[in-house]
Length: 320
Image 1: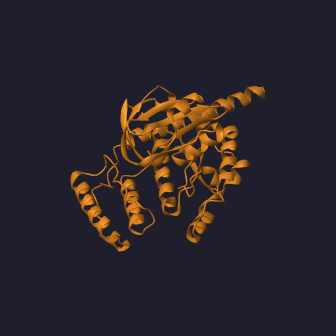
Image 2: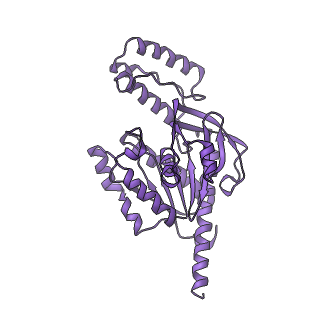
Image 3: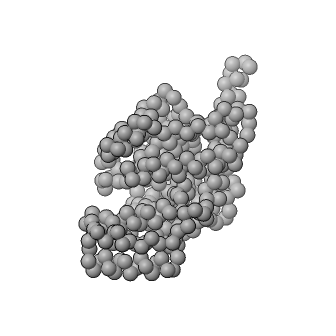
C-alpha cells in the first residue's frame, strides 16, 4: 500500500435494497469491505447513501435518516469508490421505476467523478442500459443458487482468483453477453448456468459489473427462498419458486419438496410457519468468501493506486 493511501479510502454504498434487505446489505457489504481492507493493509471509511425515490416504509425512512446521506451529497463530497446495489423491480421496464431519473443521474455522475464504481446485480442492468442502451432479458425461471464460475481473462481485478470458483446468484434477468461484447465490455468471468458473472468497461472511471452476490452470507439464499415461498402462499405470485441450486443438502431438498407438494395442494399463507429450516451453517464462512475477498481486495488496491496516481499528477502540475 502506497503512502498516498494512508488516509482512509472513502467508499460510498448507495443501498437501494428493499426494506427487508436494507440492513442486511449494509452488514454484508460492510463486513466484506472491512475484511478486504484488512487484507490489503488499508484503512477504510464507508458512507451510506440512499436514492430519494425508492419506496420505503416509515421504519426504513427513519433508519435512513439516522444513518444515510442523500445521494445528492455525493456531488459535493466525492468518494474514492462507489458501490451501487439494485432495488427489486416493480415494473417490467427499468425506465418505469420511480427511482429511474435519480439512478440515471447517479450513473452519469459516477462515470465522470469516481475512480471506479461497482454495480451490483440489478444495478448492473440499470447501468448498462443507461450508458449503452443494453436491455436486460428475462429468464424463464429465476436463477437462484451457488453457481460455478470460470475466469475468462486476466485483469488486475481478477489477480489471484482461481480458474474456477462458486458464487451465489439470485436474479430473474440477464444482460446478453454478445450485446456486452459488441459495446466494448470485457467479460472477466462467466457462470456455466447464467452468462456473465463479472464484466468491466473503462472510460474515465472503471465500471465493474457484478451479476452475482459474492457479498452474501451463508443463509442469504435460504432467506430469499422462504420469502418467495411466502409470496406464493399469500397469492402474491402465481408459480411456486424453485429451490436454490447447489445450495441445500439432500435431506433439506427432500423436506422442501415435501413442503411444496403440501403447499400446492392447500395454498394458505399460514403454512409459512411450517416451512422447513433447511441446512445452512450460518456460523461458518461460506465457500465463496475467499474469492469474494480476493475480488474486493483487488478492487480496493486499484482504488488506492488510482488515488496515488492522481495525487502524483496534481503535485507535478503544481511543481512540487
